[in-house]
Amino acid sequence: MSQSKEIFVRLDRCVGCHTCKIACSVEHSKSKNLFEAISEQPTPKTRVYVEWVPPDRKVPILCRHCEDAPCMHACISGAISRTEEGIVITNSDKCIGCWTCVMVCPYGVIGRHLETRKAYRCDRCPDIQSPACVDACPTQALVYRSVAAFSGDVRQDVAREMVSGEGR
Amino acid sequence: MAVKQMQYVVIGASAAGMAAAEAIRKLDSQGSIIVLSEEQDMPYFRPMVPFIINGKKKFPEMMLIGQGPYQGANIGVRLDSRVKAVNTAEQKVSIKSGEELLYDKLLVATGSLPNIPSDIKGVEAEGVFVLRTIADARAIARRAETARHAVMLGGGLLNLKAAFALLERGLDVTLIVKSPNVLSRLMEPDDTVLIREALNKAGMKLMTGSNVTQILSDSTGVIGVLLESGREIACQMVCIGKGIRANVEFLDKSGILVDQGVVVDKFTRSNIQNVFAAGDVAVTFDPITGERIVTGLWTNAAEMGNCAGRNMAGQPSIYSGTFGILNATQVADEPFVSMGIVHTKGTDYETHIRATPKTYRKLVFTPDGTRLVGALFIGDISKAGLYRYIIRERMPVKDIKSDIVNHRLHYGYFLR
Ligand SMILES: Cc1cc2nc3c(=O)[nH]c(=O)nc-3n(C[C@H](O)[C@H](O)[C@H](O)COP(=O)(O)OP(=O)(O)OC[C@H]3O[C@@H](n4cnc5c(N)ncnc54)[C@H](O)[C@@H]3O)c2cc1C
Ligand code: SF4
Ligand code: SF4
Image (cartoon, rainbow over all chains, first blue to last red):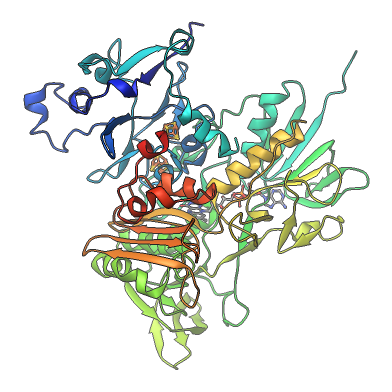
């Protein structure tokens, strides 16, 4: 099996331009076109978030497709599963909008479609080669690589340490 | 060297039992795993049973095996197999058919049963229900075909869900609650404004501070309820949702220690060698208060079952406990999350409340203000998982306290 890839964040490069968010929303719209996406109902939503940490740090945050994903074990309808590629996905046909996954995800990356009462999150863009946010980032703060290929680099490991207390 | 094949027996084929079976199978590919259920239906997601009442889903859409983490490979599920007794000296269980099964490792995951208060008369009448199993839901749906008015006794979350399902079917629904507010286990009266508004808007009739003493019936079944005040309310069906209790009666002579539920250590082991327990039937503890609790939560049952399974398969795993309160749901149009300590009246907890016409946030800190111990979000529940994490890990909050209180917290703060 080929080494599965992940999206890594190079915090020192993010300038907070929000280009990734727009690319993500467009990729998850019906038309997949910026100008049409703007007027679609329900409004296409981004699954990557760019947060600001005082005094001046910008942090892109997105689903980490955790090993032993807490959201998947917590879901009360079986809507969350892991694909063969290791990606944790939410099946919106099965989702009943109970928000249990929102309550347990320690990264706060599950969004809620209020109109349809469905949870959504990063799906690593199954229809295209590399995720839209990665391709769009003008500073290459987001990179899509296998863990092995990235490990020599400045890897932000704090995230993993944070979930190590999840008890599973 | 030939290794003896392990015999794992799991009593209960729901969240805890099936999660345990999955965990065992991951670690032991050879052992025999038998999961027993007294129900007639294949394992299903119990929290979805209200969908049978409102007709929004059919049973196959609620089945557990093959969904999410439950892949069910090489796990033998036996239905209609109620366990009558456990003999821990000979390591065997007896099933209602008379058959006996030997075990090397046993898991008790029999969940809980609805509580029926003994001070309500007439509960045997036709048209009186509890909602626990898919069979209960089908019976409720059948009665609802002809009933016009349903009275719900108890204002807990399960009963609210049943009430909404009936409302969505077109029945008139009256919720009669003894305490001064609904959801009293999950929030305080002052916290419920938005929820009450949502119930009103949805068309639910709510009577708080009232108590039913008798259910009235004739040959057609339920015809009404009698209140303590002497007033009668006509209705054709009644649902009782007055809490749950651990399903442990069949363990009476087993020697397994029961106190509210099966008492387990931090490895989910009971007082008896090779017997474990998980889910609603087990007593666990709240890491914040240290209190012993029975949680009654799917999420908790699955996590605890997973842990028990690993211990049974020989991989020591510590169960770190859970909050007594850990609920996420949506009532009508109002999503809410309630976790940790949220009842603060008459206590020294430092409490911060932010209310807008559409949202309500209550954050509870230790009296010295250094740690977050509880959170209640109504309306806007985004990033609730972050707050749960802070509570659970007892993180010192000093740098981020104002961000917590003002709902500005995000994961980026932990990357400093
Ligand atoms: C209507 C409803 C809505 C809910 N909504 C939510 C929610 O939104 N979120 C949440 O976290 N939780 C919710 N819950 C609670 C959740 O369903 C339970 O906490 C969870 O199902 C507990 O799982 P368990 O595996 O411990 O036991 P249970 O689900 O109770 O299963 C017990 C199993 O044991 C079997 N069994 C019992 N006795 C015997 C015996 N003597 N012999 C053989 N088999 C036996 C039963 O057949 C069953 O398979 C809801 C519950 C209900 C009823
Ligand atoms: S949604 Fe959250 S818990 Fe689930 S896999 Fe993604 S980061 Fe992990
Ligand atoms: S909101 Fe949907 S995906 Fe999330 S736990 Fe509930 S049913 Fe599962």
